[in-house]
Length: 249
Image (cartoon, rainbow, N blue to C red):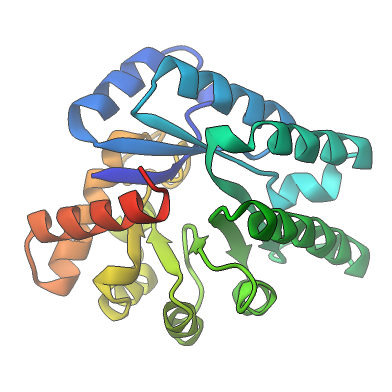
């Protein structure tokens, strides 16, 4: 199994990160740790050095942070991403989150920074990891026919947009929220396995009480297998193969 999106660099793991990583290594083929800020990108690169061949880095700037951050910080983050581009398996997470947006200026700021990541993905021929909430169709329209390889991480939009994403040849990543969400289970029923990745989005969206962690991606595999009425081994095999392909592991 592969956890295609997590944040083990976050402070929630500071007290026992080693134990979390050990549990992940016992169960998983690999994890993809996504940088979400300037500091997060730096921590992610450090973790990649500590866990070579198991933890892989994507470097980005979360749309929530994009709204709050000073322009000089964003420029610095983008510069460091370019400097470390050969150490990444993808760019992101980046994207749009209109769920709690306050005014058109914040929306425009997210869009402008997302465009910069789109340009980098095209220039360096890297997959783009997209965070899209209440903005899935807008994000899709911005990348289609432009970015060849895209992952819509922790997808929770509607089935119609999911189908359009599949038609573009892009991937949708389903998180551990599937364990307790009827909507996400219905999405899993509709999304073809060849377009699917599995993730935890740790430390969020735990299928159990408390903090999430990469080893729990097993719960996604288990639930998708139930929904699609097939074996866990088949879900494991295909989603792992998909992740290995898109991230070139």
